[in-house]
Image (cartoon, rainbow, N blue to C red; front, side, top):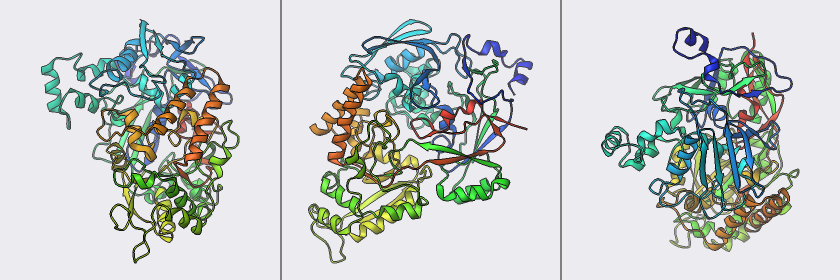
Length: 615
């Protein structure tokens, strides 16, 4: 595909497109692939978040995960110098790196992200966002040394910085192309030009909302803009060339400037295109996948495994075993900051009662094919952070115990047997916002069973099935009352990297939603200043990030998890079992096993850039 463009004079030769020292991918057991082919990817939901493109593209920052998900390796940066006190990190970029449009990727792009986006008082609401780039009380400083070298300095030691950079967070530092985004930034464009761009941009009312509408990163930005704006330069291996728009398909093509090569110096990726096809029904999608129309299927379930095995000849798919990073299958989250029911949800007695009301074994048997055991969300037994109390408390299915605890919070019932809201005297009905894109975890089916269990103990829930975008919007305006979501935090030190269910300063910490907004979006009107106990939990977690040694980090995180155990903020259902993922049997260089989950990046850690279609 790219050779033809070079021959036609539309693209420079490959040696002019690669950096002088590209990253070499040489995985034991993998061979030299062949170019070409179209990876066919069906999905139900958003063309970025629900398709495989999010996993095929995002987990490629300045550094990235190694193959066994235990440490970092250089990626866009070829080297990182770390000060002895872990407060200063000097990054050395590969010389000659280019964005997908052929423009140079330099230190200026990272400086732009930190100084002009995150540290702009209008874009950030007057406060540098708390979170992974601010482990202490002061925003980090970035110093450009030259076009390929810069230093980031923190006010406290930050031993977890590079590991945090391997997660979804890290891509933000390499997703702010200054040469493209500066047209939307008041510092770099005239008032008249900005005014004209505002008029052309739906929903934009000033330069801040204009920038947020076009940028994939920063406070209030939407990362999925890269799937709609084909002019947005990225460092992805595949770049969107045909957005889905109002249709049913998107197309992404090889990035001609991608900086990876195989051991023989051939530029990666091998596969030419990724075509995504949207479905409205998971069942219809499954039928077409089994008929051989696609090369994978996102969010396959254990219940479907026999179908894939039985139909392997017609589907052309092979099942690859994967280990789960999860601390559980799904989490049940009551928003303790909700304006209507926050006082009820904040009472631990309520959460304990609602936990005792769940027949976990029935959920496991009926929905998860008998795989797993009852469990709260927590690090797994092999993790150095395992906490028995956090994992095993309040798991029994016991309606009598559930009623005892719920009677302490909701003592009055109506004539229909359902509990009354103490504030109004009316029937308490809790709306569960259930996201349609459930990552194969069957959120809706879990909700249906919860409705039955909770009715037994006099609590009425209303199931409202919504799109991913609507769920995110309800989180953003804090209108969400309750939801069911994922269960990260199990494997190794994942609970440090992604503490959303233990510390409410992360995205999707829906149990303390408005507190998370306070830290992540301080200018959001729905943000709520947390009580001191929550502030103390966040401060303790920040000490985890600052710890200079592994031993200190594990000890401090143990305290964070003990607080989570004592407060019991989040309800779990079952352990996350090892699973599988279907891929075309014609694809070569697929790793025999890998850790699957959000933090390792799904397929990303399995290096899809080196996959190729065999004859």
